[in-house]
Length: 226
Image (cartoon, rainbow, N blue to C red):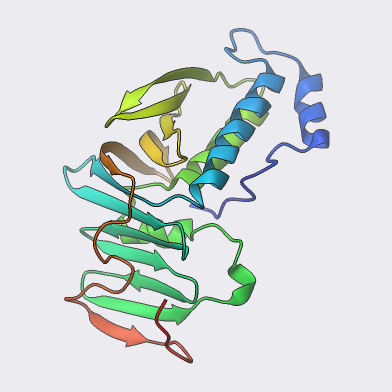
């Protein structure tokens, strides 16, 4: 997976003009301007998601579970899988395999960057995709006038969701709070199938550090507690 770009204002005025002038391909569900509005609306949800605390549990395609835990203030996020973990706090990045957790300083220059989708991909053994990466895929699909996008709404695990289906590519749903609700498709040659099974509006447990059973490789210059 490649790192996504900015979440807000994904379609600039110039980009919007470029795709709109292309016109509508036959059979498309959304006019291209509507596509831009749809992607930007989902981007706005992700921005709101930054200040939200929640714990989301997913069922993955192999039957295992994954947990995404977000703490709004102080800002921390943890992705926990049976195959690894990725954690980002204000000062530290944690990357875990089942046996080793590496702790690195989080550069202050990365204060506004989104989570490392490559690290999440590795920790999940290619079985999960964060909402930020879904948004990047949606943006690319929306910019292609030959691609159809179909929008629908519903509920999953008690949460209202907005879903976008890109026929032949992927289908994904995002909750009203900006969390991933589901994703089914192939990313980077790997099949991803994740579905929300539980959502709690608070950060539960203590996931914002290394796995307790793993060996610690602490590479931080000045270890601090977040």
